[in-house]
Every structure is written in C-alpha cells, then in structure tokens.
Image (cartoon, rainbow, N blue to C red; front, side, top):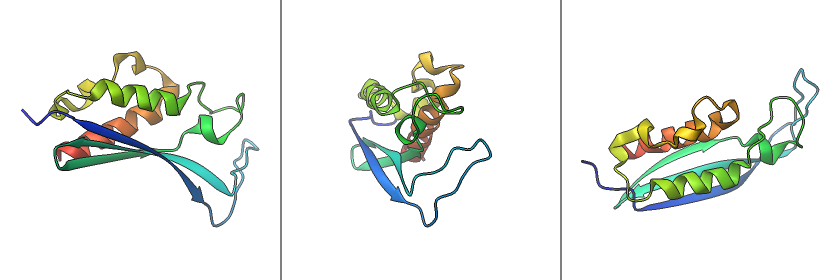
Length: 119
C-alpha cells in the first residue's frame, strides 16, 4: 500500500499567450487564459496534474465549453481523495464523472496527478 493522500493544493493560474488566436468555431482565445493545476501529496512526495477549464475561459453557451463549475468540482474531488491510497489510481476518481464529456478535463487532471504521485 502506498501512503495515503494527506494534502492537496489547487492552483488557478493565469497564462499569458504570445499571440491570441481564433478557432474555426469563431471562438477566440483571450490574451490571458486560466489553467488549473492540482498538487496531490503523500508525505514528502507530490504529484501534479493540470487542465484548461473551459468554464473559466469562455462564456456559457459556446459549443465545446463545460457546463460544470470546474474549479468547484476540482476542489470537491480533491477533498474526496484525502486519506485514500494513491496506488488505487483511476479507481479513486469519483464515479459520477463516468461518461460525462464535460468532466474529461477534471478526470484527466486527477489521473495525471495520481500517476505522477505514485510514479
């Protein structure tokens, strides 16, 4: 058994783009976008995951954006990981995200952080 996850920190970071660009859908990137980075820790070891939260970067209703409040979802999901064995990896990610396309960024972020922590 790996040591249990005992701490998490979630960061909301502003990233400045060198040049704003436009998608074929007509949506444009802002010159500064937000990223969410999650750090999961077990003792002195940490693992990191990150994703681009569309709910923070685009107004609601634009095709391809998430209907989830991704920041709140990440905090809630990280909270649910405390005390659990990180070696369980993907099995630790809340089941209510299964099959939810809007949750793919959150799931990937947590999956990256768990694998990074255990690896």
